[in-house]
Each structure stands twice: as structure tokens, then as C-alpha cells.
Image 1 (cartoon, rainbow, N blue to C red):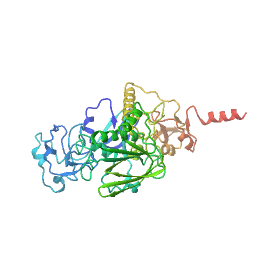
Image 2 (tube, one colour):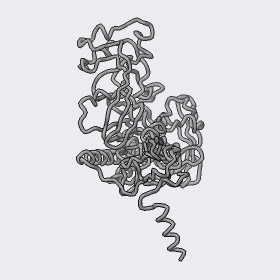
Image 3 (tube, rainbow, N blue to C red):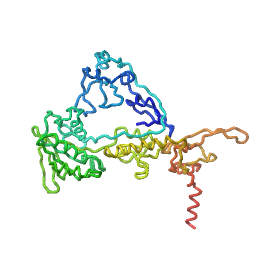
Image 4 (cartoon, rainbow, N blue to C red):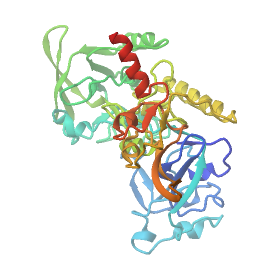
Length: 460
């Protein structure tokens, strides 16, 4: 997600992908692939005639395969701008050279089958990384839960789409297998979270609360229903969170402390076997539907984006902030900020707060004509530099480049390569100073001479 102070065309770049990022704070140059919609966004009015008449129906990615969409469709409800996209892999015009009904019926003449991807380059002053998260592929890790072959074993995200008024069931909670209303729903928490052996070691934070919400929705929407929750611990750190969890218990939810060992099909029921560690006995539940609270993981492509922006990540792939308390939305790359679950698992209130903080940081940056930088940055002694380029290759912030200088030696003009430091990018880490074989690179305030003088003083 790219932030800019004034950019009239930014709304037209929503259906786009970042190809490359170069430059530094205040001068980022971003290469963007503007993907072909096959619909002219300047002409389209979003009337819906095209997708209403399209004969092709395929699985909807937004509904996680629970519902269908057309070959020309809005990526998701409330998409901005409200301009549809043609799926060329399934559109009959592109696959068979037939149909074209959307082009014939469009009153605004906005359909353009000849559109091509465009590569454009834009300049921006700051970048906000807000790439969200993906869910752990539990089918590949927790085979005992059905290998993904039981349609009524779903994730919390599937449940959200079933319960949403704009979802495939119009807000009714129905089993995916037969569209019947489930009477007994089992919820399993920490599927992939807090599991060093097969999943992730961290807590996904939001699972306890959205499971309590799902339990409340089942008990409210389905008469005479039963909701059973298998859990390790219940973590509710937030304003009124504990009260909401207790409310779900008071409404009739049954919380069982223990792990589920196996799920298998028996007739039209799902048999859930686990244990109750508080009572010390085995438990078997006949369920109509099972909802898994799966671990939140970094979104696909985090490693590529990390290299583009020169922002470090932790061992799990979440982007690292500059300081967890003092600079929670900033990174060590000046002008690059974080918002949301790209930094780590978090719920909606925390995400909104962090997004607001990142926006304010960008506004603060843009209100200044000049930017204050840390004086403790690297410097080059050009008389010693051999231009080997080792510092350029090792610099984690891409703050060093090789330039050519001309010197007059013994009456002759001689050109040679030397290193040059961009003080706006340098973070004063000192990596280049350690790596420089000729000793030409030093860190202001921590030069080799200063450090040796300190050592001498200590030893006296």
C-alpha cells in the first residue's frame, strides 16, 4: 500500500502490483504493474449489468470457494473504485473466442478486451506496508482433522463468510455439504498457534475473541443449537473482552480445556475426539460442523517485499518495527511504515490504531521541507578508498553506492572509483566500517581512532 500526499490517479492503481521499489525517503521510485481489467474505469458506472448477465460461474476467492462469482465481477463488495474485473482464465471470450455479452450490453461502452498490462513508474514520499495476513494451511499440517476432505470442517474465515449478510448464504449459518442448519457446532482453538512441533510458536491473539463471537452467533441464530469449544487457554486482553467471553459462557457455550486428537466422518456427523484435561478423561462429540481457529501467518510474498523495501523480518516472516514501544509503526528504513497484521497477529482495534499512527507519521513527514537525520552515520575517506565495492554489497539499507571521481596527481588527470554514502539512508549500523578492507570507512562518533583511544584509556 503506497501513501502519497497528493496523487489524483491513486484510485486507478488499486488493481495493481508492485514490481520494484528504489530510492529513499521523500524520493521513492515505485515501478507498478497496472493489471488489465478489460474494463475502462473512467467509463464504467458500476451499474452491474455486465456481471448480472454473464453466463460463466466459477468459485469465488473472496468467499473461499463457498460461493460462486461470474467471469466479470467485483473483487469484493464495497470495492473502491466499484469497477469490475474480467477473469481472463475463465471468460469465454478469451478461452473460446465466443460470448462477449458484457460488451454488447454495457450501456457505458466500458468493456475493452484489448487492454494490456501497463508498467508505470511513480514517485512517492513514503510507503506504508499493510499487506495483512494469510491463514496457516491446516490441511497440510493437521491431517488428523480430515486432510481438508470433509467439507463441514471449515476455518473461522469460512464461518465469517457464511455469517455475513453479503456472503454465499446471505447470513444464514448453513453446512457447506448439504446447506442444512447445524445443531451442534464444535470450535477448536489454537490450530497451528502455540505449537512448536508442527505450527507456529506464537499466539495469534485474535482467535479467542472471534471464537467467542462465533459461539454467540451460533447460539443466537440457530434455535436449540449447541456450541462446544476446545481450548488450551482463554486469552482476552482488551477492553470488555473478558466480559464478552463470559457472556458467551452464560449463553450456553461449553468450554472444554484440551486438545482434539482426531476428526472423522460417521454418516452425516463429524466425530470429534479429544480430551478434557481438567477432568482427566476422553471426550467424544458428534458434531454437525467444526470450525477451526487457524494460525495467522504473513501474507504471501512477504519475502519479496522485504527485499524491495529493505525492511527486516522476524523468524516467522512478520515485518520488524524499529522499536516495540518508542517506534512501533516505524522501520529502520526511513520513510517506510507498518500498519496492521503485517507486523504480527492483531485484531481490528489494534490494526485501526496502528494504521492511524502510520498515517500521522506520514503526514508529519510531509509537513517538513527538510528532514533531521542522525549525525552518527558512515563517512568515507576517499584518499584510502580503493573502490572495491564490498561496503556497497554488504550495506543492509542500500545507503552506499560507487561513484567515479577525478583527481590531479603528478600533473595528470586520473579517474578512480570510490564509495559514497547517502546520509538520508544510512542508519549508522557500522557494518561497512567492519567490512572495509582498506579502513577507509568510518562511523562518525565511533571512528577506529576513537574506539582505540577508549580501549587505551580503560587499560591504563
